[in-house]
Length: 537
Image 1 (cartoon, one colour):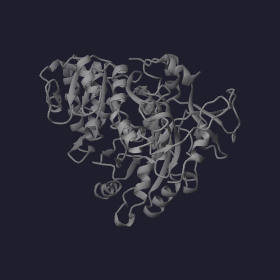
Image 2 (cartoon, one colour):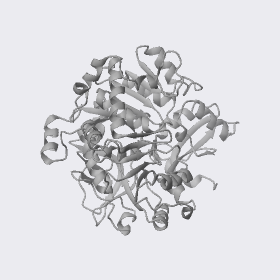
Image 3 (cartoon, rainbow, N blue to C red):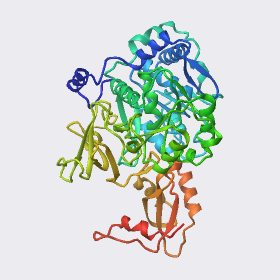
Image 4 (cartoon, rainbow, N blue to C red):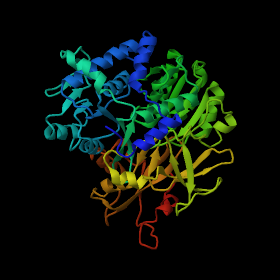
């Protein structure tokens, strides 16, 4: 499927400038299987897979999906913990011409149900029991409303109506399906992946990704981290999110080994760096902060040369502590699922630049603009609305032209950030122009949480705002005015949100009772005044 909102003229311009090439990840992986057949491609706690083994396994899975009638350009909705299997599935989908969308593990019935509705997937990969204890479980609805959808069980015990994962890994009975891979694999100018990004509607936006944009990003990120085939990359953040995915994408240009942890516990990750000799890691600020708080001298971290930290504002004190005690270079990056890695420090930048509060320089081909309220470009050093354009950007929101037009205009993407470009040409993000809460890379829309809070019988009126947090950067706080004669029971309200199907990370960290809300002239709640009204914890 061709990108909905990226025309052929622009694609040809990207090719002419050298930002895009006609090569794909599938073609690169075939080269690795030929040139590095016995080299490790990925490992997790269960198994280790070579590049040749990965090529053979992804062929079998792609062929079995084709043989079971999954059409080219069909969507796949997947919810799974990051592991070798996710890397295998992502490449198998590209070979089979299936557009994969990987949902965060924190998603529950509301978010998954919405994605299922928008994607109309031809195949679902999940654990059948996930979500069955929640009301309106999305899997039950999917089974009832789309009996034709292939459902693949990842848990190991497939109930009736579900295909066991092992069935897909066997040689296909239909030999012709294997031969179809050559004609089904995605081209460089086709959509081959969908990522999820918070939008303004209360649900995540679905970002479509041409293969050429992914390969462009692979070259850019690999260059900033100085990655080579000798690297062993620790994927210390889920690949359903930006931090994990964007470093894995570098495999499209560099045959690194990728190592997946069993958990994101700080001590376990440090132990894995020591035992697996991790050389480069990718993670999010909260995990880096937790690792920096450990007794780092207890571990041999001498193999680790770089750790990339993205998705949200990093704790610079934690970053400096980790670097000074380990000798590892902390490389900061910023981006969104619409335009990932739009600012990225370089491995060779001196620490005074890498950890000075800025977020590095743009990748090749990426343009930045700081605008005033009227959309006029401002000079360097000014503070304003941040916009950008890039050859590695998403090509728009999946089948949503109106939402795309609201964010992209004449090739420029409005990020929703307030920013400035400093005297060194480096980007500094100063805050969100909207109320979206950025909890360690997980975006939370206050209006969505407020809608759920309002359903509670105690709640008369409520407001959710971003509050600063040393670990997560931002967390949601809920301010509640109870009905007259009622009082707030914070645990009861939190439990109601949990059982509603709301993702766990969206549940407020604090619930604060107010007798009444402060108002602005229009009689709207004055959200800016709420933080000052909160009692000390």
